Length: 231
Ligand SMILES: N[C@@H](CCC(=O)N[C@@H](CS)C(=O)NCC(=O)O)C(=O)O
Image 1 (cartoon, rainbow, N blue to C red):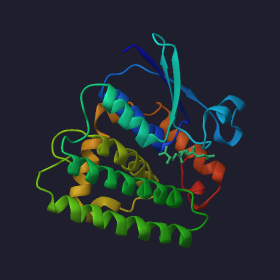
Image 2: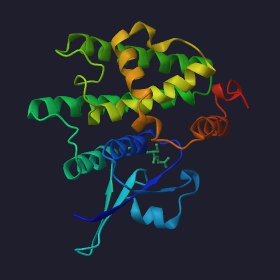
Image 3: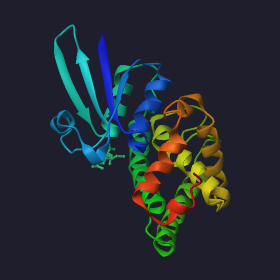
Image 4: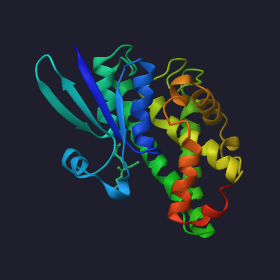
């Protein structure tokens, strides 16, 4: 099936990053266009039903079919169903459990955005508390699973790992700016994070200037962390 894939992204979106990790894991070629969400182009408004990235255009030139997909998890599952190797568990119950914890991972990503852009230290502390209680639950789950990791399902990379990698990558940047040793209390989560942030598919899922792009966004939002990021 000859298809051309085209992702629309921003430089820092954690949800697009999930799809890029999966594309990298599968060595699938794709094009990418970066937009500024504060000035959404008309063609993007037309293309994205919810006004969010990622959207992925799938062009099947043989059959002259042009389809636009949205929602990161839908895009990742489509990629998984059409490109080798399969990165979702075989058994329906395992797949369902992975999907449930992917959804949970989205809440974690969103709490991390709240922490990153918090207006002041008190608001940030509140977000940090909710991140900690979410991580404690993940740690509990990982410590009771019947595999030794370091990935969620064992040794093999899966869609769920791509869903959490953006959180871990951003955490490693935030730790440089404001060291809090967030993962120290969660050894299984920490080992998972280390396995992911050092993986090629993850390292190559963002632009080379990623840290600078994060800094620019934090500064542009003008919250509590804006002054902590070095210029
Ligand atoms: N549930 C969506 C969330 C996507 C999302 O929230 N993307 C952000 C950027 S990271 C966005 O496009 N926000 C729209 C805006 O800022 O106007 C998914 O998984 O794809």
